[in-house]
Image: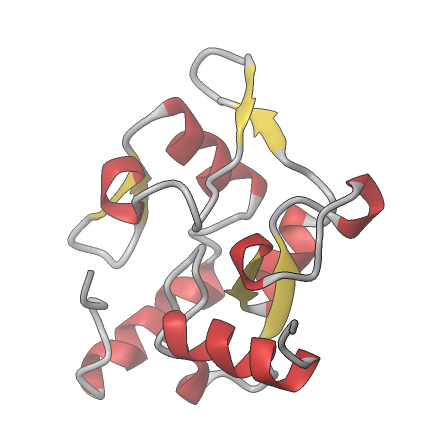
Length: 139
């Protein structure tokens, strides 16, 4: 028996600990509700199962859209975008001292650029998260 959409949504949110699985921002300080995002887009045959879903802030969801790859700014080659179900965040990204996300791999660099992970608004939110002991996120 398959889970209901409501139960699948609860599973995705709990698994993500209420954080965007791409930029790692916490839902609590956002002005908008986070989205349940298809890692492999439904338009490309991606299923509505928990293993193909991620919790995503609106900015990351809109930036990712239906893409599964993006150019690495260093090599200009298309590489797979970060997949929160199969990739470990800490292998592809790190934090610098100014709340910026640093791409460590071609996949990480492509995600930072494609999803605009260091937009000035995001940096301000991360700074605010630090005031509330929500930053940096635990791995």
